[in-house]
Image (tube, rainbow, N blue to C red; front, side, top):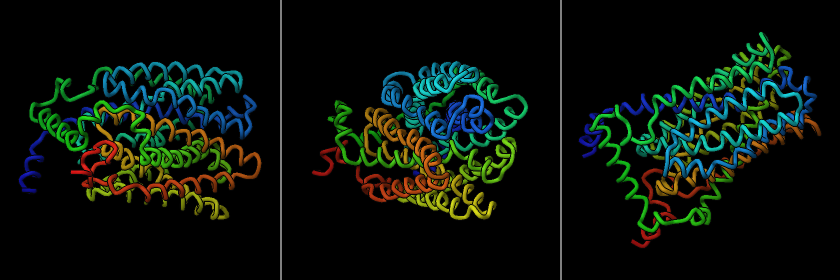
Amino acid sequence: MKMSSDALYADIPRQRWFRIIPPILIACIISYMDRVNIAFAMPGGMDAELGISATMAGLAGGIFFIGYLFLQVPGGKIAVHGSGKKFIGWSLVAWAVISVLTGIVTSQYQLLALRFLLGVAEGGMLPVVLTMISNWFPDAERGRANAIVIMFVPIAGIITAPLSGWIITALDWRWLFIIEGLLSLVVLVLWALTIYDRPQEARWISEAEKNYLVQTLAAEQRAIAGKEVKNASLGAVLSDKTMWQLIALNFFYQTGIYGYTLWLPTILKELTHTSIGQVGMLAILPYVGAIAGMFLFSSLSDRTGKRKLFVSLPLIGFALCMFLSVALKANIWLAYAALVGCGFFLQSAAGVFWTIPARLFSAEMAGGARGVINALGNLGGFCGPYAVGVLITLYSKDAGVYCLAVSLALAALLALLLPAKCDAGSEPHPTVNPHKRAA
């Protein structure tokens, strides 16, 4: 029976991998470039021109995530009940305007305001695109699909690092924001012409692929959700202990991710004593490693169905490499190797982590649940850069990096403590299917 099922699946067209994933990935890449280009602008002349201290630099990097809170849940709900395509389309316009304005700021307070507004404008992106992915890819494919989309982080890093270094060297830090902002308008045209919210709306999809997706996704929802769930409130989801465990896990994970990402150019510049252009080249390798790590762990997770294990293992590796990057700093190349190791583990847990809400909540609630997890969890994106900035000011850069390592270790512990229901092939969560346990 397994053989015939596999053979049947092999005959299903898979245009969705080539039609849906690339435009989503490109839009996410542009958003991330707009988000992290400040990491290169700071050591590239912005801090000196605007009189920005280490603490203020951390605040400017982190305040983005305060604004990031506002559209998380609305974005997830819009993607479920309305059009994620339109939501991201208008977001691209906002990203372009705000990025260009950042290129003409004259004070650090203008910078803080624009970074906050950029956070608001990008806030709904991840829950929207993850909901769109769940509309197009069944559970057996979702870990890999999520991982490919979340590869926007390392791909954007690979592009942003040398591009930022080159633009700052050839022009200055202001042109970095202006040029990368204008790229959002180019992507807007691609997005409008290529993306569809659901299989039922796409004109290019074959009947075989459409029927397979509609039937498979509907069957998954029948397996997960009872009738009562469709009328459940978001408050019912928030009352679940596992939901808060996922929020805390994501918080400590994002603290590590953005603490590392936004301070990496500065750390590399001080470690190697090279120019910002050379720092941009050195920053490529950690993001190349990130792509390899994401493919490895998401593939292993999809193959085995083990979600908890392949969330916790990358987090442990990330924490260890973060610690070693300081412990080995007497040797520049060993410390750099540890920073590359951080890159390998940087997003390896992310694709697997975002398969878990779809197992715990019905499709109707999963969009809002993803928004809450991402919104509250991404407060770590504020705390990580800001904490590192404060610790640099009060103590040293080493103290800031050790803080990130501890945060990642806590995330790994929370992943190990997740219930078995999070793994594929296990029983659904009682919150979303209260009668299953009694059956």
